Image (cartoon, rainbow, N blue to C red):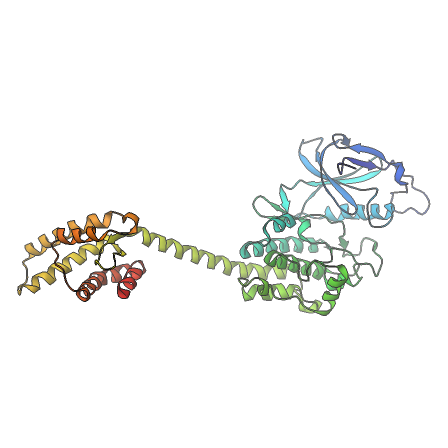
Length: 454
């Protein structure tokens, strides 16, 4: 078939005969009538194909009543997983178990029905992409986002378990990320009724699921006996992959993965990604514990541990963001003054208000050098004169980061300053910056360090 999902073959109305207990009946593969994309199925207009699994295909369809788009799932005649009758029984169970769900993190069933004897059901059409696609595109996700996604998945899994269902196939491909980043769990094709209301379909000794994400007890062939802690393991495996880019035991051959599940624990995520905090390492490894009793007892317990960690991580992000904003604000308030001495011609960042205090300091020094204290009027005049000379230099940005030697000397001549030894110039610069350091703190510390190195 050149274009997959173009044709969905539907079973004619069943003939319920002797030995048939599920109302499905039996049929040979050539007894199906075609329903095409663009056609209708029990009133639903089939407008496109979305996905295909081992036992069923999912289509985009339009609700005949509300004209709302939905996802319609129906079994595949040529699918995997035993006889067609066996797969049809599993499909009917999936429809029943999915219909129990009523949580924002789980796709909700809208309707169940039959068309010419073939069962189908519709669920909400999720506007999102598979989590597996996000991992494929980005390799790894940010630590905080990874924790947030799996915490919400764990809440949804706790709801699933509260309805007496074990999903048994939690993996990135079965999680859709909506536009707002919220995850939605889909595909209950391998789910089991933990209440025992449904008869066991999977024979003992048969494992179900995807090797990279299933728990050790599920891989051992006891798929019909696993409990909610198997889904906890799968959640831990998904979180591990979000953080490192790989499932806990890699994606190699099934036999090698199952051997690793039996014999060794996965490496901490921080060994592959050092920025993973130790507390998150401990949470992931506890979820992935081979011993059932060492694992989180429930998905809710895992969700609570992740929620506590998420508060800490988000608080650190907030504090880091505020600190960055403070540094930027301090930088914006500063002005660039060039030419503190002729030897270096280095730019020095000094708040403009501190230049005025520096001018007053110089005026006092000049007055005391003549052996008398200047009058207040003379003090103010000197300060104003120095301030007028300093402020234009403070307001003008440095051209190319530096001034030429001639420009520095011209500034010195215009200010009336006389040439003094280099040591004295450094001392004066230090005295001028002292008030700025007291008032500006971190904003002028780099300038002071530069001066001390001169």
